[in-house]
Length: 435
Image (cartoon, rainbow, N blue to C red; front, side):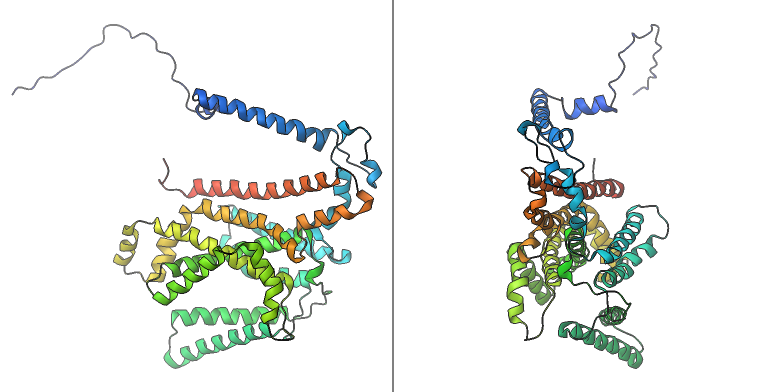
């Protein structure tokens, strides 16, 4: 079989071809996403028409015919029904109550410090390339909650609450057990070490909270508005993620007792509406406590919301764990890693990365569900807005519309911000899972 060398020499110029269609830019995006086919074009036109109808009603009410200044309802009462607009003067007058509730006016500076420090600590924690990331996260997880509790309540706790006393005593006992084990055996078991460290930490935190800083005590019954919304949402978010991870691992555990307890917990809380949980924590729970022992109403709501959200978070995390290929587990075993080492260093980071949309979706749902605490007498942002409608000073036909519009704007800003940040982190962390 002979080999032939082939060659080709062009003798004539090729005719000019049209420029390739751009794969970038707004025109390409519109053609690819909005006008790629006739049905898509029709749906795009229908969507534009619906948006036009909404904006045509909202913009005149919220901006064109709105009243921005005024001292009472007379400024917002308009005889011409067609010229009715939002009464932003009412929102301006009630804005402090929408943010702080009935918190004492002379002590509002404490809430402002919490807001400012929280923002200054959270923003750098969310930016990937900011230095001192670990120190900042530790500050937000350990120092900031204690500081917030002392500033908002006044601190100076006492052992009058038997439940807190029991927790502190348990913490001290576990810490002593860990120290005794180390002294007698020269080593400590990992679980005992962790529990002992947590116990000692709780005891130290409670000791700090027991110090009298000279601040005026403010009961949680006087809290309200956006302050309560943030307290419930942030507490639920921070508590539900680690609890959800533990429950997800427990449900996949090979130990029957641990798996059964995790399944019962998850299915129980997922099968009960949040309203029922709040009623249970507010009305039924005190009936089972010894006489003289009582939880703060806000604390009961925080516990109920955290446990409820943790059950849903557990299923989200479990979905991420099931999506990890078996080879990752086998690779961790081949490296000689223990269960906790492989989980913390290999499995869990990948699982959490895969379920970022589900985690943030749970956070957004929890943030919006904070409005349900109104049924147990806690006035969050929406509850504070609704309570302002009874004030005759600002009683107008548009007061309720303006209040609900203001609450909707606040919730939308925070929920949309969480959604966009999750998309940013998902795009930044994905490593070939998307095409």
